[in-house]
Every structure is written in structure tokens, then in C-alpha cells.
Image (cartoon, rainbow, N blue to C red; front, side, top):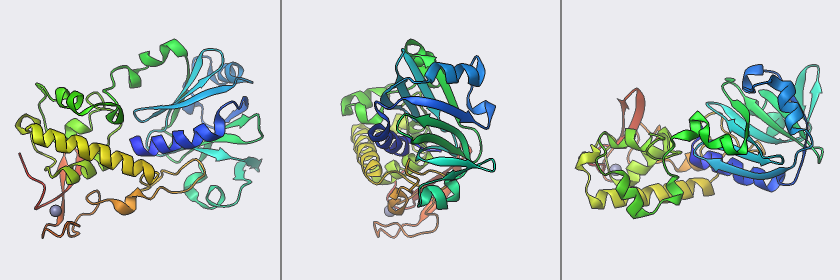
Length: 292
Ligand SMILES: [Zn+2]
């Protein structure tokens, strides 16, 4: 599932493309994608000719503010990703009119939603597994959405002392805690592994046992890893692509995630191991990541 760096990359690119454009029409091949009271007809009517005012990210979600005090909320889920380009419906299948990855990469060809724009381009959702979700809500109801409602703070908007405060009376294993969106938003399996590798902490360390120095290390590692990953346009392990259809390249800089059996790049004699923690994989160096 795309995490903060991937969604931030998508949002930054779409912001350049979409601001001040208007929606013209909508095509959907999977009613469930548009979970909307009133269905597709209502959605079409509400967004038609409305200008896109802003493109934002909250946690792993994409938020498009449009004219008329409405907001389009997009949850890409497992394999969904938004693309910006030009497509034509040929024999019931959308074909990219732009050469390159939008045309060649299979991951960009599971087109479920196409939204026509006033400049002749389209915003499309490619979603192999069909879990992606698009909802239109009133501006003042966005924060009531169940996905947004109880989210923790944004990792790149919180200070080190504020981050430290989150751990007061907190219990549990550090990797699970970092992946809990109610604790802090936008960090999933990939970036929790990479942050803990950098912070020298074993993923099953109990947060009750972490001292000030550990929390500072986690904060700094979190900041550094997320910033670096955004710079590299995120990690394309599977389905994730940028809006122009290209891959991110942070996967080439992973030190722990899915590196099982490889020597630790710190040359400390450690080997990356994989354990199952609460049903998810956790990768760590057997030498420099300390269990607390
Ligand atoms: Zn190591």
C-alpha cells in the first residue's frame, strides 16, 4: 500500500497538473470505486465544470478541494494509483495516447475511473485489485470521514518534543506503534522497517523501555527517511507509480525492507532477518538494531 512518501509524490505532481482545471465528465467501470450516496449520476452532476482549487495529502489519502465547497477524497488502498494523461476508449478498453510507461507498464493499465479535464487531459485511477475508493463530501464533513477522524499527527509536521510527548504512557512494540495511524499518520511496513534500521532499534523493542536518546533517534530517522524517500519519489515495490506512470526509486535505497538474508550495509557483520510481528513482516539487522 502506498505510504506517506508515495502519496506525497503523487500529490506534488498532481498539484502541478490539476490546479485551476475543471472536471468535464466521469467514466467508471466499477460502481464500488465511487462509494457515493446518489451514485455516479450524483457525483457527475456535482463535479461537472467545477474548478480544482487544491490538491492535498492527509496521511495516505489524497484530498482534492473543488469549487462549491466540495471535496473529493481518494483512498488508493492496496494497488490503486492516480494517473494524469490522455486515454481513448478502444473496444471497451482505455488506451493511453501518450507513449511511455502509461502505455507500456501493465500496472498502469487497470483503468477503473477516468475523469475528463478542461485542458483535454484526464485524471485516471488504475487499480488492479479494485479496492480503491473515491468519495465526494462537503468541505466541512471531511474531518468526519472515518479514515480521517482519529488520525495521529503528520510525521513531517511534528516537532521532536511533540513526538516525544506521544510516547507518554504509550505501551507496545515500537514497529507496531509507528504503524498505528492513530498514533502517527502515514507510516506503513516499508518505512517503519527503514526508520528502525536507521535508528538502531529492534522492531519488537517495547516503547516503555525507550529512553530520550532512543526517541530522538527515531524522530531524526523518521524525518530523514521520509524526506529522502519523497526526494526519490517513493518506493515502487509492486503497483505504485507516479502520476506520469513512472516508478519511484527509493526501493533501490532500502536497507532492511525485503532484504532478508543480505549482509547489513553498515558492514557490521549483521545479516538482515525477517520475523512476523502481529501478522506483518519485520526486517532488521541482527547486529546493530538493539532490543530494548
Ligand atoms: Zn547492521
